[in-house]
Image (cartoon, rainbow, N blue to C red; front, side, top):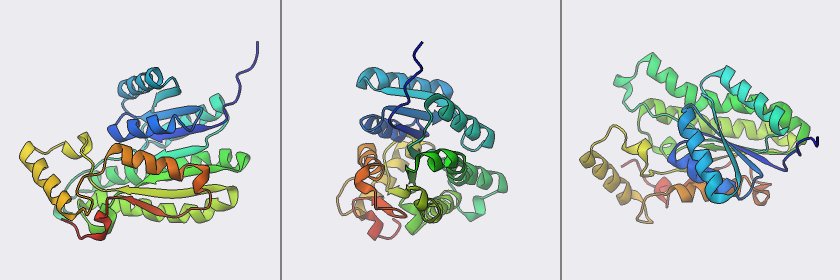
Length: 257
């Protein structure tokens, strides 16, 4: 029996069952032999992967993994190493938003946001080190947020600002191994992530505020973010590292609405 051929490139995307993760997976399937979607909702990520594979004719798989769980992360990277032998592109997209001001914070919700949004990307990069050391090439794209510039929900914004710091630090540390590390910071996108917990009037008011501060006069779309990720994960961005690419239509220039 012939041994399975090692793929030329493998992309891993966390939060793969969500709208943004799905858009990035579809776009990255054009660039990679294998796209692995990780999400803590096993049924949802499996369904997304199957639908994308069927529609695009590309190899997309979905596995359950909770990025706040160190054991899950290590098991996932071990599985990727054992199955494919490499991890070329890592998109740290999984996130949660525990909305609230400082007065609303409690240690449990704060720690949950940090565990998913900030510790998870760090742990995934740490787990992938041996693969990058061996191949001498890699791309990391961390999904930050425009809010790191102007504020917003306390734990969410703090964690996303931390993602920017992590990006810059890892760019320095991993550069000698041929790995670039960048971040994409989108402005508001109309997805279940932003509509959750808001009624129609609240979401309309939020949308109108964001439209007022965006020179381009529209909200960001999942496709906008996916294209930015694909660029930073490509050879064309091989000499770009430690940067934050704002996908905001100019909203990064304005104060918080």
